[in-house]
Image (tube, rainbow, N blue to C red; front, side, top):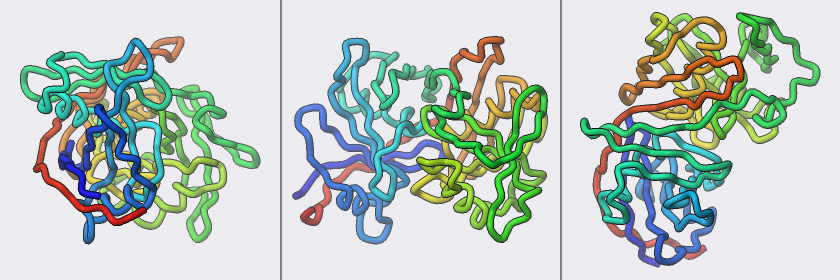
Length: 292
């Protein structure tokens, strides 16, 4: 089967984008993995699919598959590419687009400077909804919020404390002194697959430069370390604000580029997180997919 695709990137987080607004391609897990393969396929961190919305308050549905072929709940950098894609393809002329994701609807806005702002919705702190099972774990309290100690095989467990939050997908955020020296490649996969996270987790490593500036690396669930992670940037800023380390807006430096994240710490903790950053089309093409 030969299909058209568009290659896009947002702050170095790269995607293959597929248009299923007219008809479903019916791809299998193996075919998503093939598309993401950097040697035999197109190469991408995630595969993004544009589909018709199934609810009246959304313009499109947005479906995300990781490089391992598994469907996931959310991708912030992908959301920015999504709105640029539907506008460039003539699927809409709206500057503000409402998009259905796995757990709700998000709002995407094209800015005059070419960047895209995404209403990522409010963060989720209910541990059962992250999901995170703290049974048998201990926590410390910092600024009236808990950081959890994760025992990791082969790692000094006293050094691994994570703030747990969901941005529609689960995140465990560590504060590190120097992000370039952080053990992302070794500790990241251990955190990702820790049994306390039944759906696995994205592992963030955050260096606080000042209250309005952080540096961030993320080991993404089902992908590995990426050049940027939009929901990871949101989760890191939310965690930093709750821990009393940050105040919005916050500039987030990733290895692939810069994002701006803003979140207001209201008593009800129900304010949306706003993310602004770049979205770029790299190239378009066709590819022959192997049989399922």
